[in-house]
Image 1 (cartoon, rainbow, N blue to C red):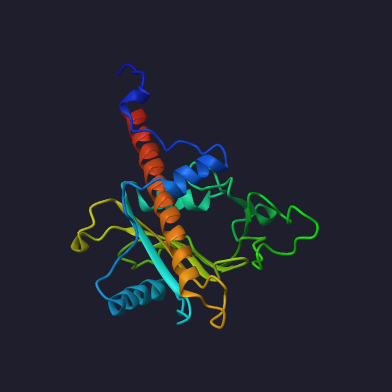
Image 2: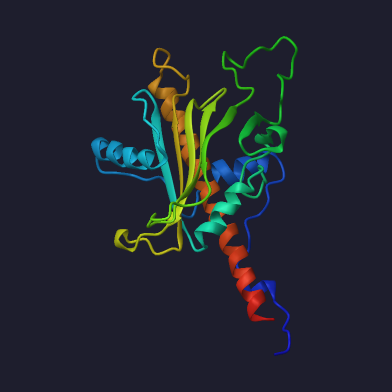
Length: 250
């Protein structure tokens, strides 16, 4: 069979790359995501039960003082492929607001990551030791608890995940990136399900807890996370579709 030229116009496009702080704000905070990814339940009791099931899968006990949010999206790409996207995460501004929250791998390793506000490794003025009393450098410090890169032999949903202890400015708690095969009985139709779960308290302890501040941070977190997941989905599906088309045209 003669080779045919693959036309990019026949493919879905990848998400546009953010170029500065303003496009970060537009793409990840102002923009309303196509798919709402926040997992919602009818009651607080059901929410806690669902959260507990998810955390049991990664072996984490939930602190009652932490706020736990779970986001989930279906991706039409193999589980192994989506998980490799997570393993290659370096803050690329296609899927992460890297101008507002710069990703820095310590010793170029995924096991330890610092998230720096606007890329600052120190405060912009010598006299500054915090920002309005908040120690936001680093914004996050992620230290690996467990990476499960190969599913268990009898794991029916082919699960893999990255699990981190999270400290720094905020949030305080854990952060999990989890990928599994879709479950037909749950009405899931995509090839894979990508889940982000975070457990946090804005101040890091119960005595200083403020419901208003936590709720405000949750709203920001939920919008950014939903846009990140939508972009990972778009990028993964575009790449897989492009590879399929290239094979067809060989």
